[in-house]
Length: 384
Ligand SMILES: Cc1ncc(COP(=O)(O)O)c(C=O)c1O
Image (cartoon, protein in one colour):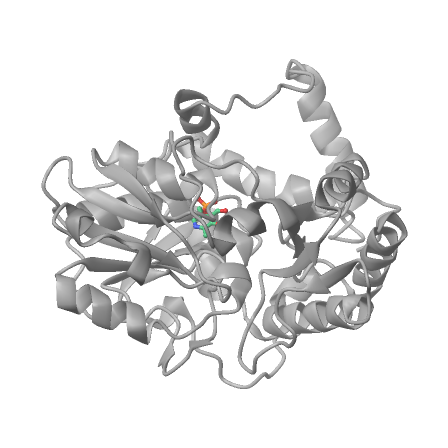
C-alpha cells in the first residue's frame, strides 16, 4: 500500500495477498472457541453477550475508564446501568478500587485486552467467581493470541471480538464462549439489496486503494458511474456531540440485531490467517524500532510478546494534544480514545484517564506494509 495512491487505510482492505497462505506458528484465536455466533460488529457481540446473561433489569455492568463509546452503548441499550472502574499501569482492572457496597448491584464486568497484547485474566477470573459476577472478555483488539495461562477468549463467561479490525470485511463481530452454551440468537435477516451492497462496498474500497491490480481501474470507472447517480450530501466537519445521547447516536447501533452479511460471514470463515498475523507482527516491530530510542515518546509495551497479534502499537506521547491534532490533520492511521462516556469518574491513580490523553494507537493492520510503517513513523517523529 502506498500513501501516494490514497490515504493510509484505517482498516484492512481486501487485496490479492488476503488469499495467500503462509505458515506461522499455530496461534489460537477467539474464532476457535467451541461456541460461536457471528454478529454484525464487536458492539453487537457485547450486546448479545449481555442479553445471554439474563441480568435483572437495571443491574450494573462495570466498564473500564479507558474505553471507546461502542463498549458502553451496548450495556445501556440492554437496559443496564454502567459504572466505571480504574486501571493499573498494565491496563488490568484495579479491583481493589471497586467498593464492597457496589458489588451487590454488579451483574457483569467487561474487561478488554487492549491493543492486541493480551494479558492473563487469572486474578479477574478469581475475583468474578468469588463475587458471582459474570466476566465478558472483550477481545475486539485481540482476535488472536495467548492471554497468560489460557488462549485469548477462554477466561470469560463470554468473549467478544471485532472481525472488521482484523479482516477485510465491511462489518462483523463474534460472540463466543469456551464454557457456556450460546442460546440461539434471532437476528433480523438482510434484504438481498443489502447483501449486494456489502459485496460492492468491499470491492469498491479495494479498487479505490489500488489493491486489486489489474482490475481495479475498470472497477473504479464502474463505481464512479454508480456514485455519480447518487451524490451523498457532504456534512462538512460535523462536530461530535459529547453528551450521552450524542455519543449513543454516533455509536451507530442500528444494526446490532441484524444478521451478519453474507460477504462478512464468508470471508471471515475462509481467509487464511498466516500473512495477516505475520504482517501485523512485522508492523509492530517496525514501530518499536522507530520509537524505542525516542526522547519525546515511548512505547507503552517495551516488547512484542510471543504469539501476540497486535491491533495497534500504543505510543505514549508527552506533548499529546498538539501532536495528535497534527496527526489528524495529516490523516495518519492513528487513533486516540479521547471520547469518554459522560459520567466516567476521575479516579486518583487511574492509568485509564492518562491513556485517554497520552496514548496514541498506531494501526498495525496487514494492508499497511513495512514501508508504510516507516513513513508513518517518520512523519510522527518529525511532529515530536
Ligand atoms: C475494545 C473494544 N471493544 C469493542 C469495540 C466495538 O467493536 P466494533 O467496532 O466492531 O463494534 C471496540 C471498537 O473500537 C473496541 O475497541
